[in-house]
Length: 160
Ligand SMILES: Cc1cc2nc3c(=O)[nH]c(=O)nc-3n(C[C@H](O)[C@H](O)[C@H](O)COP(=O)(O)O)c2cc1C
Image (cartoon, rainbow, N blue to C red; front, side, top):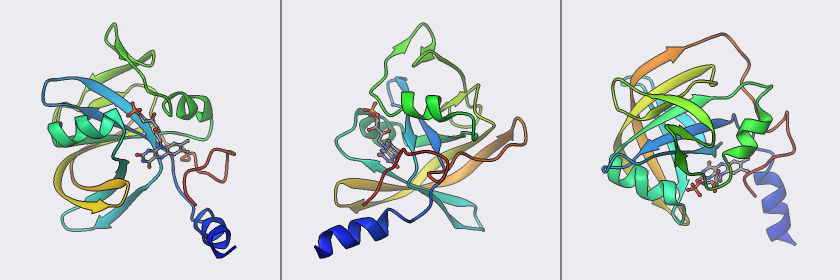
C-alpha cells in the first residue's frame, strides 16, 4: 500500500520533455525521449540527465561522452511518443527526423526541436537502474520561442 502511495507521489513531480541526442564513439547516432532532466549548476552551467542502463542509447552516451537536449513544444506529443521506441539511423535520419551534428560535440540536433543544448559529460552517478550523467553546456541554440511540452500536457508519464 505504501509502495503505491510512494509511486503516486513520485508521479506528481512535473517534467519537461526532450529528445536526448547521443553519438557513440564509433559515430552511431540516436535519440530518445527523456524527462528526467534538470539544471544543477549556474557556474559552470550544468545539467543532469538520467538514462536507463538497459537502453541501447545508454551505451552510446557512455562511449561517446556527449549528449544534446532537444526541447519539444506543446504541439509535439507525437514526436515525443515516437522517440520512446528503439529507433534506427536510416538515410541520415533517426526515426525519420532530420538532424545536424552539433558543432561543439557532434551530438545530433533535431530540426523540429525549438531549442538545443549541447553538453559534454563531466561526471556520472550510479542510480539503481539508471545512470545520472552530469553534462556541462558547451553550446546553445534557440530556433524559435515556444512553451515546452510537459507531463501536464499529455497522458505520457515516466516515474513512480
Ligand atoms: C514520458 C517518457 C519519458 C521518458 N523519460 C526517460 C528518461 O528520462 N530516461 C530514460 O532513460 N528513458 C526515458 N524514457 C524511455 C525511453 O524514451 C525509451 O526507453 C527509448 O526507447 C530508449 O531508446 P533506446 O531503446 O533506443 O535506447 C521515457 C519514456 C517516456 C514514455
